[in-house]
Amino acid sequence: MDMKVPDWEGRTAEADTAFDRLACALSDQAVLCHALESVADRLPGGVMSAECLHLRRAIPPILTAVHRLEEEIILPFMTERWRMPSGLAEILDQIRYEQIEEECYAEELCDALRAYGTGLGKPSPETLGYMLRAYFDCARRRIRFDCNVLLPMLSAASLAGKSLGLPNHSVPSGGSGSEP
Figure 1 (cartoon, rainbow, N blue to C red):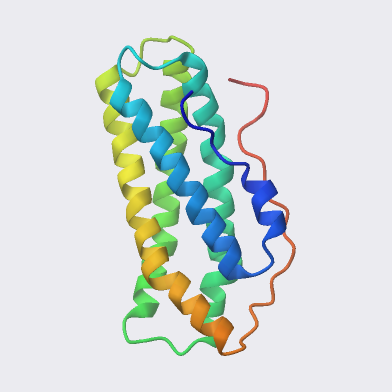
Figure 2 (cartoon, rainbow, N blue to C red):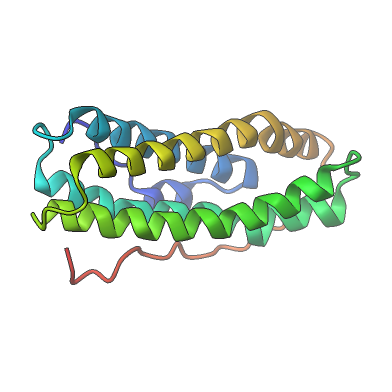
């Protein structure tokens, strides 16, 4: 595999602010998107089975950790303690809805990566390429939003001395561990 997917748990254990945790999460998602794009670009013949299986296992913990951080810390902080500009409440509701969509699509993508990686012949390389591109394109849009909206808001809150009251959550592991 040409790209190492980051160890999210190890990086977030070192980050003690919501700003740092979100920055780490966004960086990890960007690396994951790059690895997924690399696979899509090399289909059908240049992709190793182990690479598909590795990425299949990497998606859930990174996605779950990011959504958990947003849902339990960042979005509540923004809605409860921040003076929100007009229309931001609707955007935050949309983020929550999109999280559900993203998790469902990620599950389908993980199933497709597992099937392709174990040689089941389905999905076709064209279908898997389309699925990969749809996923990482959407993830990159969210990364841009978080970088251009959420990170600056968290930075401003930090400069204003507002505490985000970060609990020390454990990061869930992804997949069942026993299946490919």
